[in-house]
Image 1 (tube, rainbow, N blue to C red):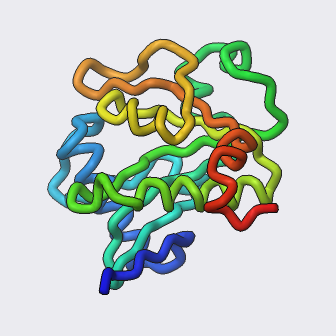
Image 2: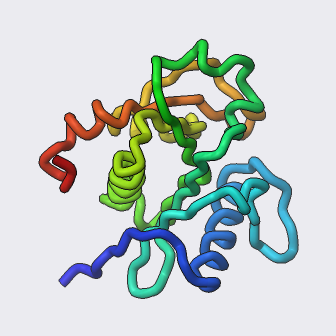
Length: 181
């Protein structure tokens, strides 16, 4: 029998500690976006504004994403007059720090995280999701429904494509997999 994956908001200190550890493994060791440190944890600069959605299996974090619905978003600070580059929207949120442990990539963890974001966002009437997608995974983001909207940002060894996802189009495309009417 396959292990059950639970996708939920991080609630405990242990879950948050695992978030900071996976954050370090991904954005320091794998994608050299941040400097290394001896503690091997990376607490996001927007940690106080973030809500973390985690994918857990047997008490172990296997995937995560940070959600921020308070502007300015990190992309607001990188793209001047960001609204001019986006389709019309009423309410947006930004997802950041998307990470799935290497041993769990290629499966359903990414989709389960995306589904949880969209369900939560839909309930709160968000209609646009923003992301800085690593260029290493552009095809995956596009497969889910994200669209690029600006030039690449970041530094040479850690480039990102600003992207958006229309929540309503995503739900229409995957309606049978959602409990949303």
